[in-house]
Image (cartoon, rainbow, N blue to C red; front, top):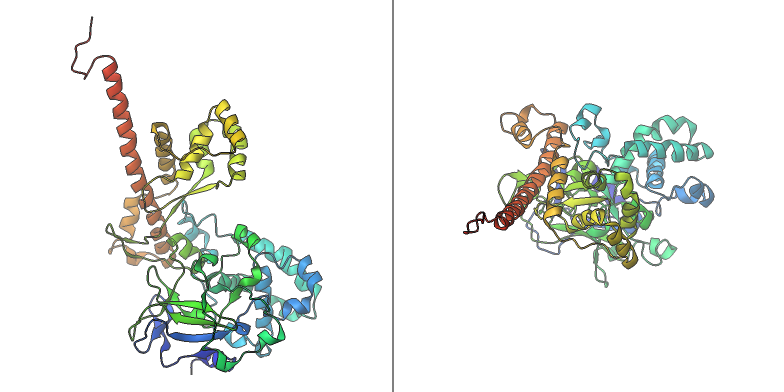
Length: 484
């Protein structure tokens, strides 16, 4: 029997082994497949809530105590959960999750583990500033290491270099980033009564199941945000982030979801959301994120046929930083600091997003307008506490064109060069990391070029309109002769 399945069943998990099995798929690793035709609404497996691994279910936080837990800020970000996973792994067979942790990957293709040369291939993309390796290692040395030394009875000195090393910290962090789910605490959870799992109750309940909302999960598909997404961490209860055995075995691909995780009072159930034919892969969902997020979090990209031809990810986006826009609007960016602070206080973002719709974002137009307000207009906007409307005009179009042009210039290669790299003649010569980097940056560049093409038409039309007005004013092109 499969070691994971054997462990899962020994811990009270239920799996319909006649309906689902695992196999290795080239380029995707281990995957779940249907053994027979499955209808919509079929429960593939059921996981007791007590079998999820989080800061709520691990006994480490209780053993460590609230004083030390809070002193080392282990409830901030994913440091506490990483430490729990390290500690559970260090317990060996004494940990109820030992059989599960032994099945998790130790090698990742995410940029966190790339060499400097490979990382350079991501220059200009939305990935490069979000890897967060420096901040992650700062947390390790500043928060986790002091905690380890404070309790040598819990964290055995002879295990520090193996179970609690920086390498293991990165590995567990990447496991959380790529495989965790957002599982909200239910009222009364954690009591003795809720901890008792009735096996006869696991595949059926009188209560309607609730979907683990992809919008609440950082990876879009029922899974958690990465440790560096600090803004979201401050708002959510990090205890909701949990490793969910068996559920994390399902792969995901753009537009392919056919099963989702639902939660009930005592269990989490993986249920099919559409019919699945025998032999087909069972796909969960990541919420269809862009390739930049897929690569950063999971170490892969989606390349499928696009509606307008070619291949890529229909969900790709491009991020434009506010400081680039400020540089295009003002020769003295420092003079704009008050307006920028006010923009942020009013709920504006410091990054603007373009997607496959070539229309320029209205919030970006509003920001440009704010930077262009005269002193009197700026005072009136402050008094009304109202942001400028996101309405395009010739002046905005001209600045937008400059912004897009400079944003496209941030990539070290051209669209044509990247397309050549991914051609059938060249793609086989690329390393996996470089291929993924080229796919990500090419998808972003195509969005920029498409938006630029539309903006260029608008700018040229406005210039032509201005020229016709000028011609009319001096009599040229009006059908009248100018007077002498």
